[in-house]
Image (tube, rainbow, N blue to C red):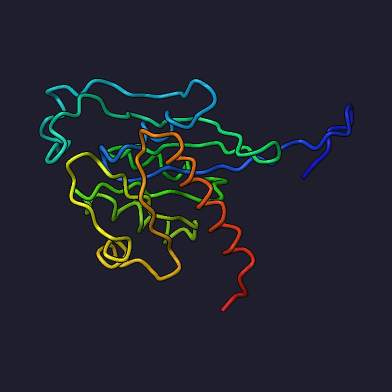
Length: 194
């Protein structure tokens, strides 16, 4: 914690968190539901030009897509501010992930069980760069429900990677995911090295 010379009040610690996952997993919705500021979003209408590029299997009603990134901010308490960066989900925008991940302390991989395979690239990306993450299963209406252990096995996650359930539309649910991520980061930092 640092202090502000003018008032001797501690300045909040700021933490950069990435919200990644497949196309249509709910990253924009997640950030929008928790952000205490008007979230910045680069959502654009899906056009015929991307019909052959973006797979809409299982999400046929999706009308918009993120073409750069989303940004939001939430203060978990007076001493901790999270800056949330939502990554684009389509393969053609993956070049942005390297820039967005600079300085990130942790990440959330948002998963959609209707298209679970779409979150493999995000899991691989964070694992290969040593960015601590958890998997948050966005429980869409009408999607089949799985236990966290089933998701962990299906994704081939290491035992220490948490899998939690959420509803990205509900602020309390998304905040719970953020709190669990921070706890995971703290636990990882305090755990002895193997």
